[in-house]
Amino acid sequence: MPMKAVYIEEPGKIYIKEVAEPVAAEGEAVIRVHSAGICGSDIGAYRGTNGLVSYPRVIGHEIAGEILSIPANSKGLKVGDRVVVDPYLYCGHCYPCSIGRTNCCNDLKVLGVHVDGGMTEVITHPAEMLVPIPDNIPWELAPIAEPLTIALHGIHRLGLKKGEHIAINGAGTIGLLAALSALAYGAEPILIDLVEERLNFAQSLGVKYCINLKTDDLLEKVAEYTDGRMCECVMEASGANSAIRSTLDIVCHAGRVVLTGWPSKETSLPTDYITRKEIDIRGARTSAGEFEEALELIESGRVNVRAVLTKLVEVDEAPATLEDISANPGNYLKVNVLF
Ligand SMILES: NC(=O)c1ccc[n+]([C@@H]2O[C@H](COP(=O)([O-])OP(=O)(O)OC[C@H]3O[C@@H](n4cnc5c(N)ncnc54)[C@H](O)[C@@H]3O)[C@@H](O)[C@H]2O)c1
Ligand SMILES: [Zn+2]
Ligand SMILES: [Zn+2]
Image (cartoon, rainbow, N blue to C red; front, side, top):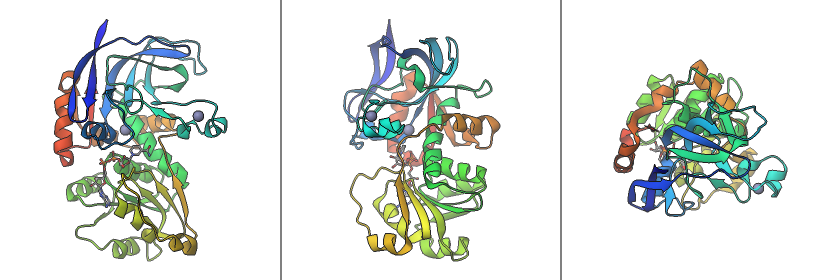
């Protein structure tokens, strides 16, 4: 049966397309999609600014749905179970796959980026890449588990500990979820952005320390908030070159930096800072086993993901909504599509 999919034919051209229902390959489940999130990378796919995307493409990698069919699997998932999708495919035999780091496979394929995604009525996906959703998380919130795993993966790559300061560049969905997760860890987030509304919003959710680069002196404020020490942890979640550069200024001696943002251009760095301060710098790509924790944080309310949900739309409204997010990004954090 033909079904509706949110389809980008080429940059700037998005519409609902009727596509054929997929057929499961070996090891795959068939999933009836109930909700899917619109992510910054979907906007990048629409604008043509996400260099990883190939076209045409069905977008969407923040996906929740119900299992229609599934082969035997290690989690005991069965028909009718509600699941979120860990949205990538890996080769299984390259070096990172061989050491269990499948999220940075040499040939990683992310749904909605390298292969067709989940903003459609029915998808197929490897049964082992599905995670059960607790009963009390509604469809409208479940897809937010995916961006929350990105935030958590950055935090885990940093090894953030209770009581530590974590400066976060970017108060978008990822940076804000990282700040809320840091609070859940008992750490002290310092959120940095240029958009006052985003910082005010974060403050209303309990993020005490915010820095607006337009009006505040970054180094002075970080020094003030950390009693002169600077930050044990810094997470780059903006993708801006200047923000990547400033991580080396705001991290303390013997501190750690994680790079989650995707810059579109190369950044020049004074590497003598890395040597002098003995900074540990790590990358963070997608997530690695963080879905269960993300769902637990949502279920318990320790991270209030409803607060980041700006709007819910029906699938037919998705293309126009995506165009509006692209034109007025400041008006939105997370928008989810219901099927
Ligand atoms: N590593 C991964 O697997 C992964 C996954 C998802 C997203 N990302 C990347 O993470 C970044 C954040 O994603 P998002 O969805 O929250 O994006 P977003 O566009 O919603 O948020 C980015 C925020 O950064 C702010 N910003 C811009 N320039 C800045 C600067 N110089 N200093 C501080 N803040 C600045 C913007 O005002 C905005 O609020 C993006 O680069 C995205 O591509 C990476
Ligand atoms: Zn995303
Ligand atoms: Zn691999």
